[in-house]
Length: 72
Image 1 (cartoon, rainbow, N blue to C red):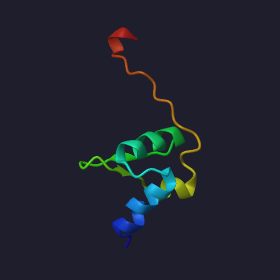
Image 2 (spheres, rainbow, N blue to C red):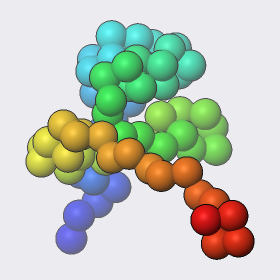
Image 3 (cartoon, rainbow, N blue to C red):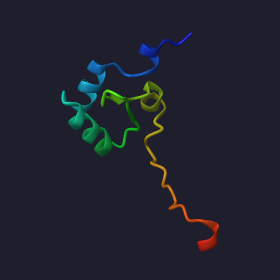
Image 4 (cartoon, helix red, strand yellow):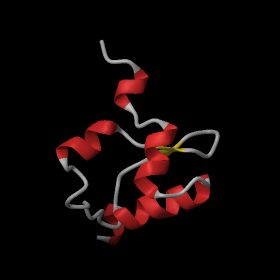
């Protein structure tokens, strides 16, 4: 069974990856690097390890602007 430590990058790994210790700067760097992440309730970026291993961040997906059917 996968444990959370195996599923997500550790704080130390995120610091190494981004080169930043400040959470706000880590988030900014991850955005520049186009690495998918989430921010938890503490404001820390959470990176799924599989996103880096599979290369799923190589092609960012474009999201179409949502419009109600009435306006389409």
